[in-house]
View: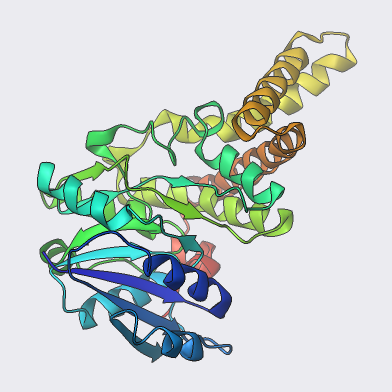
Length: 332
């Protein structure tokens, strides 16, 4: 099996350098190539790629900006491999990653897999806090971590494998972003392909975002979900409502406090304390524990309000997704 690593990049040459450096340390003896797609960047990574040309098998392509999904499709169309591994530019790859992918595919072959993300000790406290809230069972049910149902996993495109056969059958990623990865997973299921979580195939996901960018990101996640429910109603889940219900419940608890009913507010406080303690223990830092509570509030507020806004427009007002949220769709 010949792997093609597909990496879109937009104005982040520093990230590509870290990623490529980590790939020079791979213990895997399997043949692989690296396909980098510059998605219309004004600050390109061509000089960085040139530095690694003699150490790694790299192909580099520049194209007009059309979003990460279309850029991945472009890269897979150019790739020589029969199995594609899709990575984000803000990832750092552990030395055993490709070896673990090869071993996992040999043990239980699937045409699409996903792996979890983790944080390095060198990451900032905010990055570690965001990583905790995005992966913890307490905050997302482990959906982006290691506890999502292994046999029916929706891979995320920061760490995802896709066979050439499945890519050609499905047409790859759609124009929506974010949300292009669960959309692809569901379409693959409908075509009869299996997906799976490979728990040992993790990457270090740096997520170079501040609080404002994080809020914008999770708000988009919330807006995307009702659109996916419209396209794939058979895969709707009640759990998608939880962040919105969490926000509504919090407002309700504040109202009840005005009439001296404090029990519900205490439940929210207890939950925040549990998150603080769990993160502090996991990261060996009380400071990161407090920052995780901040990340939790932003994550639930951004996703929950985004979901409500999208549900009203898409399911109640019957607006077309591309007209209701043009910022979620890239034009090719």
